Image 1 (spheres, one colour):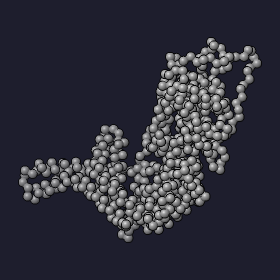
Image 2 (spheres, helix red, strand yellow):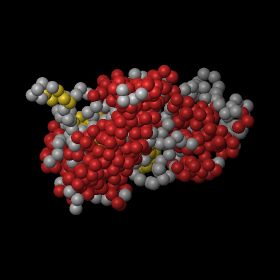
Image 3 (cartoon, rainbow, N blue to C red):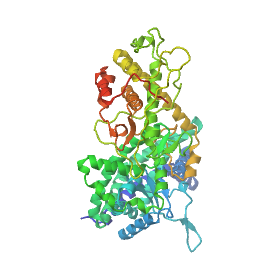
Image 4 (tube, rainbow, N blue to C red):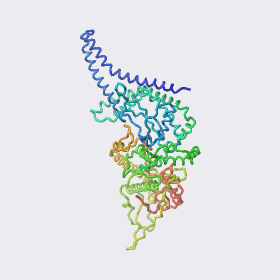
Length: 622
């Protein structure tokens, strides 16, 4: 078995190879100056004849240009700010037990303790060097002779926030052991210097990519080309160096909770699956409506508990919940969860950095009423707006309703708002029929609605024809009777959603985000996406057919809520759910797809009859 020192030696050898590339670049930059010095010295001492004067002046000019370009590259690389992983810094005052656990772990491993701890809304943990002068004021050590030098500082430990809520304290300690062990190789001077060189080149490439204008862009593009050349030359050495560092850290952590670490690694895969489903199925619909769930990390526990109930491979994982969770190591887990949830919304959706009138938090108890129900009605309203604006050639003659005047004008919906915010979450329940799950300890995630009552007719004058309104029957008839209507509606829905997304991105870009980030204490790097777009989009853009299916599903759910006594609900793994008599109906997806893809309304009409939905009744929109 190889010792940790073997991995450190291998990493140091690769670090020296990276530093030799830096030295070679310096030598190439200084070569014209060295030639010029030799020529001028030879001419001054008389060892070279007068014929070398021209060569000396050419070498001198080349040396000046080379030194200027080398100084430009060096200045940009030294001043460029390396990107930081977006994270929520955790002070020792807010998590003394967590800091104590990490320091005890570092003492057992005989490595330096991390300088700080931060949380990130992701299922991963790593060490991050934040010693660059742009990331904070440097600490200096004083020597006896009075001269100062920059103090070596250990990297920051970044922990995935879902781990703190799902894992137990012992599991978190076992999981962090090989990560904390990496502070040992990181303290080696050669490895640290090679990492700083690679990070500086990477930051210089990012600066050159953002350069604008000819006067400033031309020299920065030159710097970018040189930095890319050096990165290509040192890529293999840097990759092998990091692998050797990871191997050395893993070998050093072998004797610390090794058996428990195997169990913890199994929890990592489960946490990743639950976190992904929670973000894409539950959080994303709320983000698209301008609401952000404020307890995502607490929600991942409910999602993973439900996953362990449904998946036999995860059976038994929920029994661990009786042990002490790692979030107990925080003094105020609710405040930390809120900050991490807001950061997740910005990372994966591009939301604002601070709450506001158009970006407000929502709790799990309010989610069904304020997100699910409103999302369905927003999408139903958008669908009817598109149907109202279809050209006459694409609209078949709708059969007159019973008792209505045959000469009545076509259906119009002037009472529908002209514009409503986009509610672009997927509304179709998943194909797997699982029960709807209630949030823990806070009550059921849905609210019972009283049945709607019709307004009595006016006693003044003869009874008028029933006022036209948005009905599910109208949607079904249009899509079933005209084969061209489906494609046209899908295309127009896609254009409408794209327009609303552009408007939202423009609003995000108009906000001053740098000052807001500094106000809430979130550490950002130079890799932040511009234009209001997220760094890591969760899903690719939906096709027109997918949007049409989502909107038809939303219209069906609105009709079920208004005419059949159904209620909106929350499923932790599938997101918005339709509850009929308290049970989730997960069989709506196939009938809707049959109507959207094939124009066959039979399965959907049968489903409506089974549930008791009256499609001819108007539904309430936003």
